[in-house]
Length: 278
Image (cartoon, rainbow, N blue to C red; front, side):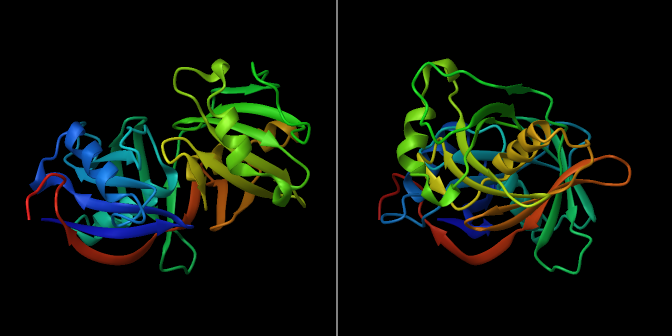
């Protein structure tokens, strides 16, 4: 039996385990995610987060993230905030914690505002950005612009005028597998530019293969794309409104880029490993 916590960040939900005593390998973590994440047959989640021993001297712990279908993901912004709060609960008591991921070293701390669930995740600048992306397949006429941004993982940002009218799963499923995005594919983020400093965002996530209430790295990609499209100053803050809640992207006085939002514990439980005989 494996002890776990169920957590979410603006509706993007996760099964979280302390893998240090379990020592589950990559294939075992993938099998666990595929078995536990289906909502009608398991705990139900968008992915599995595993806290492990660090791999570099600069890190306090290691974050492994596996999508609901068992595929590995390099980074997850909402998941990273949840794992920070989980790490604090299992004994990591520093105010700011550093952790290894497949996308590099990240840091997180409790949000400075009076918000008991808020976590500020410090992230590298999004430098791999391509505006005016051309896909091999046809793009819906409602999409006014396409931008690619790698914000820890691959994202295609599609600018639309009416976010509520977008059939996210239909369009996202098609665009996410466009040959021009091979081999990794991309998450598809439909973005609406709203009043100054505010964005609306809905995301189709690869690996989940469905619309999710929120996507942290997608929020970073969208804010980066919006900054380019609006020719905004590098320190322009954005409030990003997703179906699951609101996230903030901004910079500290020292110039460090961050993603900020809630990380909420839902419940704890125990579940059998895949293949365990009753």
